Amino acid sequence: MKTKNKFICAIAAAVCILPAYGDDPIGETRNVLDQWVETKQILSEEKSDWRLEKSILEDTQVLLQRELDRMNAAIDDLEASATAADADRAALSEEKDRQTAAASVVKANIGALETKVKAILATLPEPLVEKIKPLIRRLPNDPNNTKLSLGERVQNVVGILSQADKFNSTITLSNESREIAEGKVVQVTTLYWGLAQAYFVDNSGSYAGVGKPGADSWEWTQIEGVGPEIKRLLDIYEGIEEIQFVEIPASIQ
Image (cartoon, rainbow, N blue to C red; front, side, top):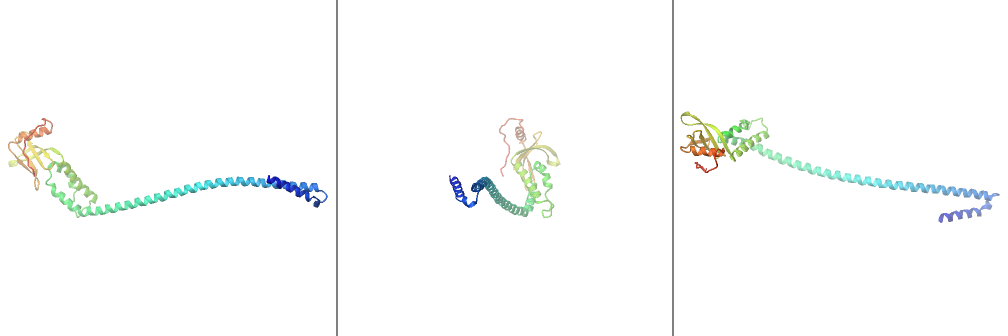
């Protein structure tokens, strides 16, 4: 309605000024109307173009805002990752410091540990010694002058002590040679109760006794008359006889 009113006003204005345009007022009026129509068309086209451009700009703004939000989220993730990485580096650094301190303590004491292990080797039973011989050979002769790394030295000590602890928690049956009076050697079967005590007997049951760890080695004592009972004990252990009570000598240290 507003545009229509403007159009009527324009016509009226043209009619009012007809006398001022010479001898052909109708032609002049037509020219004015043509110019008016052309102007309206131009304005209409520009308005349509502006609406299109506005729509494109609004869509572009939405896309740019989404991209900005995505980039901000990515930056937040990177900052969070950087913070987590810093925390991990700090934790690793602390762990490294603890391990370095622990290694220093071990390095200062490994020589003394190796010396103590060597001292107790003589008190270990023969089957256990045979099993750990490879580790024993790797113990350095001089703890202060060795090419072995700290890790290798610790592994040797821990390996020997672990095998000794395992032996001490089990019952072990072993076939051994034992020297008796006048240099005579007999074959005996020995049953070790951990590292505390052992019983031995020969095949005939005539030579039997007990053993226990001494200061420098295991000490074996022959006991008359106990051969049959110890042999029965071994047969029960091997499943040859049924489980039953057996009276054998024992000592508590």
